[in-house]
Every structure is written in structure tokens, then in C-alpha cells.
Length: 251
Ligand SMILES: NC(=O)c1ccc[n+]([C@@H]2O[C@H](COP(=O)([O-])OP(=O)(O)OC[C@H]3O[C@@H](n4cnc5c(N)ncnc54)[C@H](O)[C@@H]3O)[C@@H](O)[C@H]2O)c1
Image (cartoon, rainbow, N blue to C red; front, top):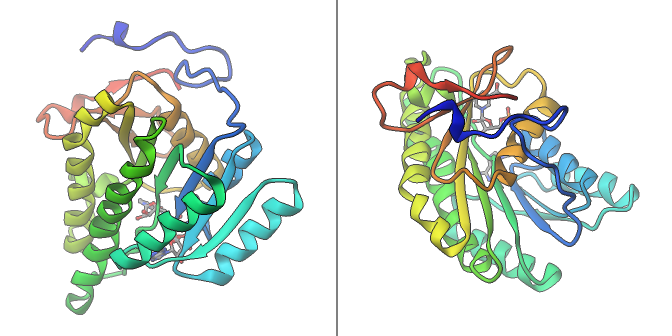
């Protein structure tokens, strides 16, 4: 791949993405009650989207949605444990019912526990990997109607950068990246699935800009964007042994 695969960045747009506004678009954010998910919800709302904020903690989701509604956005809070497929189905049903469709999905819910205690391995994989799969699987049915994009949030530790003290989390995030790459062919149905893998999210608002830009890039499908604090975002092909020589793209 050469740098000519990527368009020149336009000033302020990052990655050459022309930031179209998201009016009449419906965005779903899991883990949207705090941190990066809440920042992504706010970013999409600022671009005009209607936003569904799904979180296992309804109080958090409700607060984010309430603030967005107060600022004029159509926002809905929904309690959902993404690890439970029946709850994900209910989330999609409600989204379809209340907003008549779906355009962008951000799979952000991805807890980790310090030390990755053995008793929590299945919970960590269940939320980070299976939860992402549940949401993706059921979102595809809605996204097929008019096309759209999914951005999965992984972690650079899933690519081999440290965090060996968190094997379940690393395995789950590696799975999220591989899932993303394996869904590349969905672009033929106008659904682009990509993944962003941060090291540390020191500024949720900056991270949200990168995640939303990735969702809007029409030249990306099945790709992983490495987001390392203080460095340019890099696109890598998951499974490519040369990932550490990843291409730096204008940001
Ligand atoms: N914060 C970092 O430095 C960092 C670094 C690398 C990767 N990540 C990844 O980025 C994403 C966002 O991180 P963050 O620090 O903003 O997260 P966070 O921990 O602040 O928030 C995650 C949100 O997800 C919700 N949540 C937890 N379990 C859930 C479940 N089962 N179903 C639905 N919602 C659930 C929580 O209530 C919370 O509101 C995660 O996927 C995380 O693994 C974060």
C-alpha cells in the first residue's frame, strides 16, 4: 500500500475526511454513558445526528441523553448489557421503533479489570468480544436497509503492545480486530466495519473526533486504526506481520 491510497488531508478535517453533517442520521453508541462513548455521542450530536446511548448503567446513559436533549438533540438512553444477546435485540428493536433506522454504530463498551482476575475472564471476553459481536450482528440487519458504518473500539494491547497482565482483555480485543477484518466484505452491502485501537484515551473528545472520522471514511473497510496518544493515527491491516511499520496517515 502506498501513501497515494489516502487522499491529502484538508485543513482541519483530519485524514482528508470531509465532515458532512449527520443530520437525519441515527447513531448508536454502546458504553455511551461515560468516557469515550459519551464523547462520541456528543460529537455525533454536534454534527446533527440523533443518538441512542446504550449502557449497562442507565443513570449514566440517562444523564448523557438528558444533556443532549437539553441542547436540542434527539437522544435516547437505553439500559443494555451488551454481553446479553436478548438485551441487544431489545436495543435494536427500540432503536428501529423510535428512530426508524440506523446509520452508524460505535461499539465502545469494553471494561477491563486491573490484574485481569481469573474469575472475570468470561465476563471480560463476554462484554468486549461477544458484546461487540452481538451488537454488530443485530445492527447489520438495520444497517442493510440504507447502508452505514460500524466502528469497533479495541486496544493496542490486542496488537501486542504490552498489557500482558491482562490476557483475557488482550485476547478479547485481538478478537475484535480480527472480527473487524473478517467483516470487510460487508462493504459490498454498503456497510463498512472498522476498528480503532487506542493505547490510552487521555482526551475522550480528541478520541471521539478520530472515531467519528473513521466512521465517515468511505475508503476504509475491515481496517484497524492505531490511536496512540501524541502520535499520528496509523492504519494497520490486522494479521499483517509488518503492522509495526504501519502507515502514518494525515490526521
Ligand atoms: N481508557 C483508556 O485509556 C483505554 C485504552 C485502551 C482501550 N480502551 C477501550 O476504549 C473503550 C472506552 O474506554 P473508556 O475508558 O472510555 O471506558 P469507560 O470504562 O469509561 O466506559 C465504558 C462504559 O461502558 C459501560 N459498560 C461497561 N460494561 C458494559 C456492558 N456490559 N454493556 C454496556 N455497557 C457497559 C460502562 O458503564 C461505561 O459507561 C473501551 O472499549 C476500552 O476497552 C480504553
